[in-house]
Image (cartoon, rainbow, N blue to C red):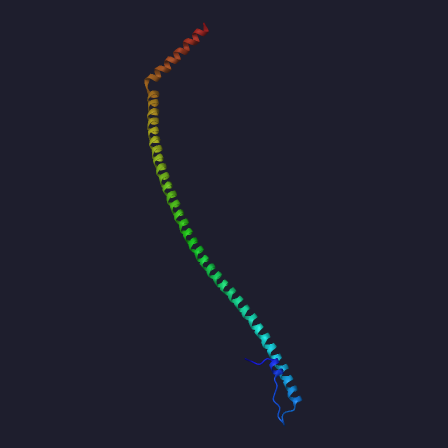
Length: 168
């Protein structure tokens, strides 16, 4: 066990006949006591500082651990978000492809319907043209026929009769 300043102060030496000067020894011991007390105070202060520094180190280590954990969680979250975004992008692409296929199929179906309708219109136009041609030919035949001449003659006769009756 180390000596305390009080131990040094209370130390008694045995006396010899021709021993050391007691005042010098006491002065020297007083100086040793002061220095020893100062060293003990400094030691105590340094231990206190060491303890505070150790507490700060523990605090910073705790913060470092928390930051490392937070960083790991953030990295995992970022990776998860990235994977979710990729999955969502794939789903969006698939949905867009389905919609594109549906739109293309609908457009092809509509095109087929339009082609059928167009063909039907062409057929009807051909039939109409043929009927119109036949009608016109029939009308021309009628105009070129002798019946028309007879009709015109009959009309003229009716007009003449009407004119004569009016004059009477």
